[in-house]
Image 1: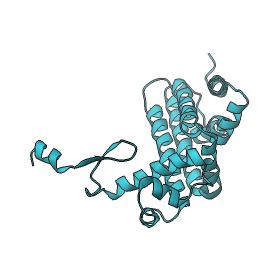
Image 2 (image 1 turned 90 degrees about the horizontal axis):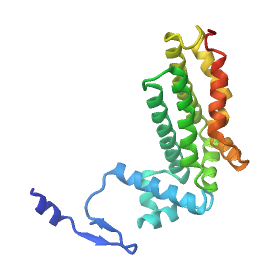
Image 3 (image 1 turned 90 degrees about the vertical axis):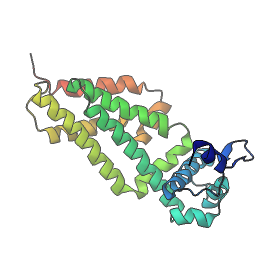
Image 4 (image 1 turned 30 degrees about the horizontal axis):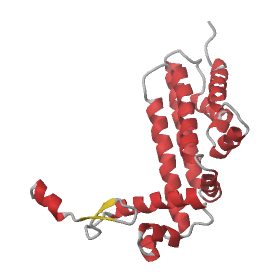
Length: 223
């Protein structure tokens, strides 16, 4: 099919917001529909709050029936779980990129926690209502949260191992050291704690840098 013919076969129309969209008769992939439901739900959670948003509200925003939403998600909680998993995957992807990048291990460790902190500030703390989603995840998705913590610890451990091999850190137990670092840096990785510190006026970037450098001094070889 030529480009012109393809273009002419897609009838474009404007909805009430004035946004051009593709003819709804064109089939949408299930994954695309799931993504649209998640994006719309997240926007409504931010605007109305998690507790006040119903599946019917999400369906109305998408101009589809609630039954169609339930074809993709068994409940509102299932939508929230999918949103949380996506967020955690995004954090992990950014963290692995830092850990696998070039550069001294101490610098990568500092960048790692600054990257995690920046993600939470940008994506989870835009509005106070978003914290309701975080609370839901902590209360109802403990296995998922625990798995995320394990991944983050593995990332920290990788950087520690690299530092030991390069002679930047002393010969230490990398797994045990990663556990200690994780516990010590929780205030910069836990969305609710980040939120509280911001409300209290903390300079979290400066505090994160100082904390990482303090911790790494304990495992840096003496000259």
